[in-house]
Amino acid sequence: MKKLVSFALIGLLAGFMSVPAHAAKTAKPLTVGTDPAGDWGAATDPTIAPAGDVLGQDLVGATIGMADAKTINFVIQLNALPPSGGMPEFSRYTWDFTVDGEARELDGKFTNYSRGACDPTSGQCDPAAGKLPRDPGLQPFLLRGECTDTATPATTLTFCEELAKIQAAFDAAAGTITIPVPVDALGAKPGSKIVGGIGTFSATISAAPSAFLTYGSFPMDGLITTKTFTVPR
Figure 1: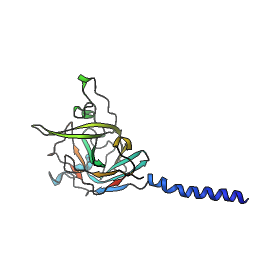
Figure 2 (figure 1 turned 60 degrees about the vertical axis):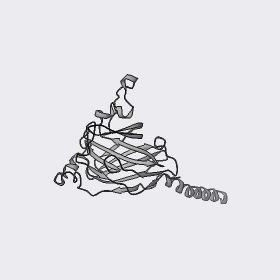
Figure 3 (figure 1 turned 90 degrees about the horizontal axis):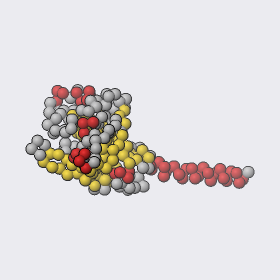
Figure 4 (figure 1 turned 45 degrees about the vertical axis):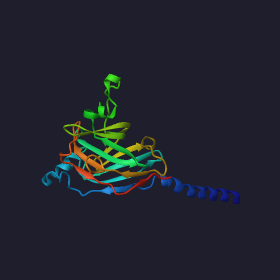
């Protein structure tokens, strides 16, 4: 009987000791930034702000957290998100950040056939070299790195290497877009620091109308993150 009790106690202690290690991998997501509701398009025309909810482009917050040991969730919080994902081909979301100082960008839509099928700025599509157009699928987000800016007479184009294509989750009820990014694709490791950057639209995260290109003169919303996420050890 004493042996059985001893084994039971050892099992309980082992269970308690294992909780912190697991909890470190699935800790509560970190809110890295917030933004006031109702300010979509304010820099262009404050009276058009309600359109931000219809388009699913009024940013209110952002979190980063571990989905599991191999995946990091980047979550965009919106004031409202229609079931259709706003305007599927029209609402574009970008998130600029660094991983241990290396620049990375997430760029996506609910559907992105206008650019996701064939994007010459990423090197992903070059029919002459045998890189043919593809079906990007629903809710595609592209993880990019090694970006450079090139000025043209009309606008400045950003050329980036495509590191991964990720299927995001659009949750209309919660008003969230969750982008599950593989740790390996990010080039991250335990202890890596993810810091918000300032992208083309003068914000860490942007939500804006877009076809193939997004112009800075378009009405949009931006959010600047203020906290650093550290990949747990």
